[in-house]
Amino acid sequence: DTEVTQTPKHLVMGMTNKKSLKCEQHMGHRAMYWYKQKAKKPPELMFVYSYEKLSINESVPSRFSPECPNSSLLNLHLHALQPEDSALYLCASSLEAGGPGNEQFFGPGTRLTVL
Amino acid sequence: AQRVTQPEKLLSVFKGAPVELKCNYSYSGSPELFWYVQYSRQRLQLLLRHISRESIKGFTADLNKGETSFHLKKPFAQEEDSAMYYCALREGFQKLVFGTGTRLLVSP
Image (cartoon, rainbow over all chains, first blue to last red; front, side, top):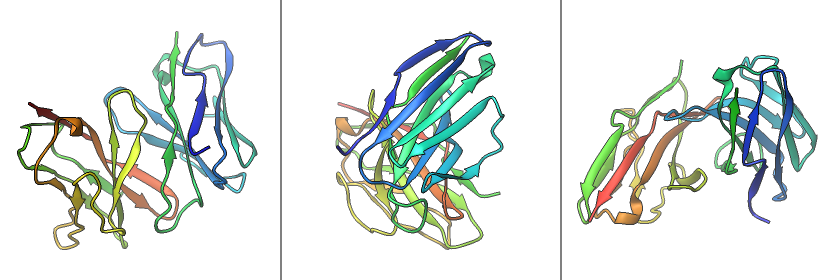
């Protein structure tokens, strides 16, 4: 399996809901990432996990809570989101978290709409 | 702050014409630069990285440290090259910073 998968593809939630996004890879990668991409904008890094430990949090509001239960799985728990959080959420993985040549492989994204 | 600038939002060319997508960067250290491409309804994928000095799908990109540029070039554009292209800079050890992207449209 050489792909990053994300579920669900689409998610619509109210501001009081709690939901989770899931990302999975079976390429033996030890680094995983969450990005947020607003319409017609580039992806913006949110979180980096390296060897299942959070290594970067780009000052993301606490209503976004990442979790890395194991090296293949990355979750993003959502609670009390705002309509401006509507975006495409991308997951990526790489063999290691940094250093030359570590290509990031991206998933197809989850399109989130907050009503 | 480190920055990646792609001055063109849209680049429209005819099939067979040369293409150059511009990317300029500002970075205080030794930069590592990439070009990512997103075809319609497909995921973001790596096209080129400067350390590999390779040609992929006919595209090349040379890092010019004097001009702080990493422009993407192809001598003869094909319709299937139509896509969104992002230049990206590795900032620090782990963070990837993307430019605003250039949409390339190749017309027959």
